[in-house]
Image 1 (cartoon, rainbow, N blue to C red):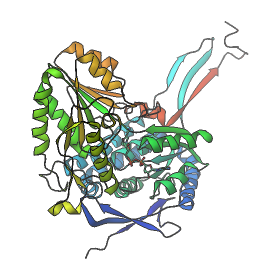
Image 2: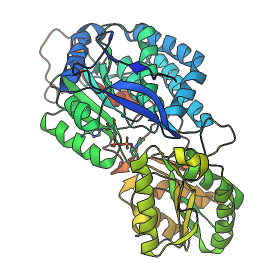
Image 3: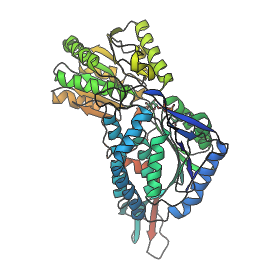
Image 4: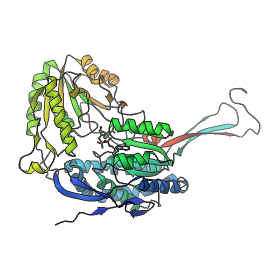
Length: 496
Ligand code: NAD
């Protein structure tokens, strides 16, 4: 019998056990009996040591020239590329997403590493004319200090990479606490960065639970900013704790994304996009298409094609190349999805397919759920308002572009939206009027590229963006510098 490996925290350049000696198991959601690894259950003491190490490393690291910092990221990018397949396989084992998507998740980390390595030679500020003679004005970026990074389980390499890499290239030091369901991928990622040559204390990893290790991280006096991706409920908590100690908080939270299908849409394309957006990653993406507003003229036709496709999807273990939809992450999430199906039925939505957990045969060993389609959903129903985070899509009939946009914007979130239409005028109106951080034309709600800003409005975010150059604003502070070479006192706004 295979004895599962024990993985340690990474603190101050050393792999260490939790001070308490407590550990927890990481299990495969497609095969509950398989323990993927044993991880340190860190508490406040472990977290404090990690934060102190990061604080100690900061004064030196911030003075390492950014192009030199970037060289380390470049080497990490190469190592990630070499180990992509192994990382992807481990990700599928701990998170469940199909291997094809796990490879994409690692690829996002590789892309971000090369991109941020490039930023080491840019990190542009501005030079601008001063209003007084013989005076020079410019702005430069400053690092923030110790950044606490708290990540969810649905993108186990990509999301840590979006936080760690820009934070480091900007000259910050970091402590990361990955989700308790997927610590292995983050462990691999941190190990690669450490091996690429990061000095001791610049990156620190503590594994453990939100209420314990996560809370402790928020409480650290040395931490200057918290970058959090996860649920809106926990995001609110992070925001409140940070406000009290004036820490910067960067929050990426839930979504309730929509695809608008107009009467002139290429229906096959719209169905392709809906299937990919709703059931890819088993619906466990913050950008998942969990609502579709479909013009009444094509509503029946769209539903028929969508149900055919949903029923044909192959659910199973993501390591099997024939499988298209993996398991849900854990028992709790399976329970949540089941509850929402019941809520939808109680609200009077029409269940067209799916709606049940899969428990027979091989399915008994994992958290599998049928791809589920609800029709005749009213925009205010809970299944059309609340994030479900599972393979459930709500189809809402609409009268045209205006009502589709109203339905689209009528939720508390604002991450991603999409329109399928052949009419350029409709596309531009929706592009202008959908109040979401990301918008797609004739493409699904998922599929962000790393060199564009990523984030959302309303309860999805708090005004920051990750990825793109926008991420540099999240992980740095501006300093405006005035150099007066006139040799006399010059008073701005007065001596004009
Ligand atoms: P979660 O909020 O339960 O957990 C996220 C992280 O926060 C985990 O590491 C967890 O341990 C930690 N945490 C929990 N309680 C904490 C506390 N009190 N203090 C500090 N840390 C705490 O979310 P999840 O279930 O891991 O992820 C799913 C959610 O993430 C969904 O709502 C999804 O929409 C969202 N998400 C958003 C984005 C985005 O970019 N907007 C991306 C991916 C996922």
